[in-house]
Image 1 (tube, rainbow, N blue to C red):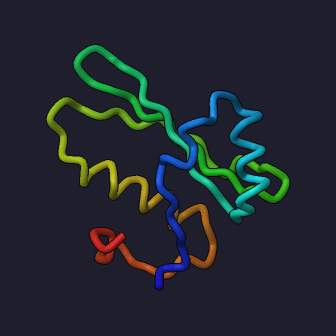
Image 2: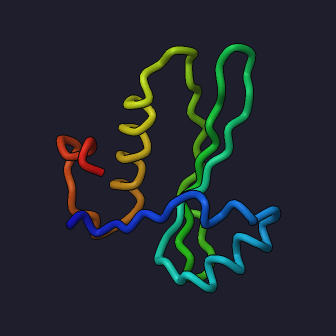
Length: 101
């Protein structure tokens, strides 16, 4: 209903390198994918996020988001949802529907 399909993270559990991820994307053939990496930063964490268009493996957006200890997960969820809306044409939801994702 939103124009977005989400796959479980377990699909990438055996991806140990960029080559592994690219091979998986060639098999699954999505239009876009989002990847993230958590980096410790004292008591907090930084999430590095990339949104990639698979056709041509074009990096659409890269951003680091600082997560403050005890910060609600919904804040990160909202930031990621807004990034997706800005970067991926054709998504059909508004910010009031984020909890439904």
